Length: 193
Image 1 (spheres, rainbow, N blue to C red):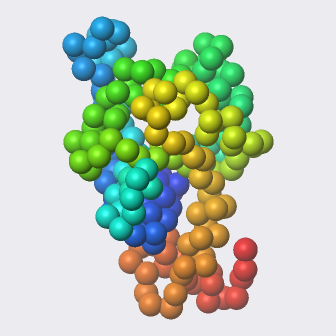
Image 2 (image 1 turned 135 degrees about the vertical axis):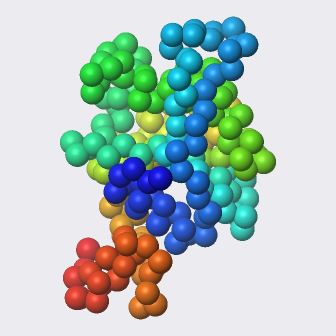
């Protein structure tokens, strides 16, 4: 089930770009992992959307998308500092919102689950955000995140980027989703982004 509007937009964006999708893919560290802590690791996490496009190759074939629909926007540098500094955000330790990036055991679990459902370990990790505050470079090139994800690339994808792409690709044939149909109606009225 798609839980929020950003997840629905990501789903439409991926479909418009040739991806098949699955949602809320559960993953968790193996109890045999040397760093496994029952109190912290016994409950599975989930990745919001996994997209698979058989016509693409390499890391672009599979997109693993974590949606962060925070209305204040996403300040990548602030989030990195909070994770590295052991700070709290949204009432919990900052790393918990990005466990698959911040902790090796969670990243290993994610890579295993992606391989289980797609047949490949190579993918692009996408952090989909409502609005980017500042630059995405430090996030996308963060050495710990990249190492934890077995060298797979990271990208930040903004709502504006998705809407612009969807708007450009929207045609007059009735769209198969509510978001696609809404964009068609908006386009039909003559509004331009």
